[in-house]
Image (cartoon, rainbow, N blue to C red; front, side):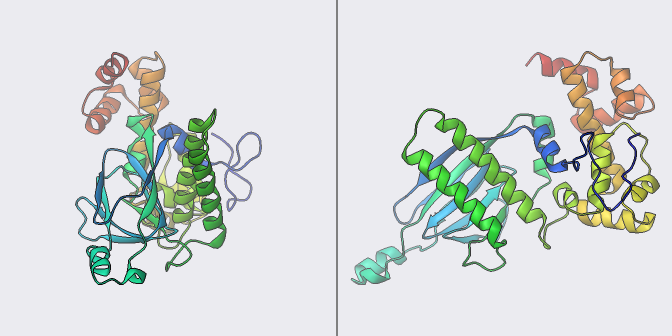
Length: 320
């Protein structure tokens, strides 16, 4: 087993001495990639639907209404707001002014006409659908309010996001060789910045992402992801986090949203899908590598999670 850090309050180090970057590792496993960006400047009284893609909306002008399928509460979005829907939930963006445009024009009060809405929409693809549960465990929507909104992110985060927005606009206005890749990389940057700004906030919901930013639970998560096949116990993970067993168990659930054993089982099965897809190891050896005492126990857990035995899953993936 990898030797624990001398100071357990520090994040575990990689072989080159750098702190373990759990967020980067998890995002690599998802193989998330920015896809494309579209500018929207619709006429008044619009409603535009979005579905089946992770989406980013950046409000540049006016006010719009965000409605997510299955959620009763609608969100009013304003200039400067960055809105991320990481799970790809179906949603719509509509005119928040309703009939205000028509009424103002009919009354001849041109000065009272609301500013036309204008926003950018970027989309994302997931390279490994088997790891998509990492995004699926995130909230349906993460909103970072602009400087005029309440509860907004810190100034440095907003400044960084604004720089990224300007870079995207520049590529859209003056495209040249490599612009598609530039836009994709900038979308990746914005996605990561929004997620880590949200996760480091006090109001972050319990997820693996919030846990990764917890200075103590993050140590346990890093240990699990480095060695999913190790026979981890709650006591051992508590020691790695410099917490008592009871304090660790309670804090893990509060930050991550599930008990350590449940999270470990998810990570092990994720690791198993990678080995099944990318290697020719026999199923029994895959089971051993990811921490299962028997092939039968592994096969049961795998089928419960993915709906098919590991050998059949491997065949199906390779013949798609």
